[in-house]
Amino acid sequence: MMNTIRIATLGGIGALGFALTMGQAVADSADVTLSAVDKAAVFKAAGAVQRKGIWVICDPPPDSGSPASAGATIDTVRDLNGDGRPEAVVSDGGTYCYGHAGTGFQLLSKQANGSWKVITGNNGMPEFLKTKGKDGWPDLSVGGPGFCFPVQRWNGKAYALNRFEYEGKRCKPSR
Image (cartoon, rainbow, N blue to C red; front, side):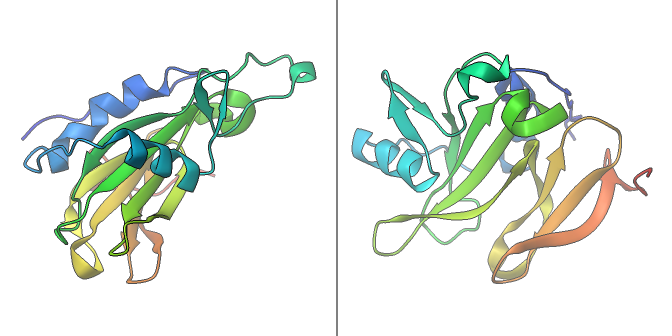
């Protein structure tokens, strides 16, 4: 079993932490390549707008003292729930928008009609676990600063808090 590394980040380097956590539970699922049209549709569905050729979800105002957004990225595209249609994870960085985690994400799913729909989103880095919720959706651990992370489970309508874990073991978050 591969060990999972989580990195608490500041600024726009959250994608590094995401890349280090992503491989564990979905390594057996093949990546899907998106067309340019689908990439644009994913970004738009995630709420991103294009500024100077970069897709941006949250850009700090100039007077905030925070650096401009480095841009949103599509970090992975895979069929996570086994329905034959791809899901995509879009991440964006910056502490102004995402607090101490320094990164946020949105999970989108391609619908039967070809459109993309946001399934969930949060501050932090997603890690798809081997445990599953309704309809084959993987449980989702949301990493960030600290050592006890929320794990959300798909209930058929939304991802909802199921438990807290650290390195695969249940934990209680400190208050």
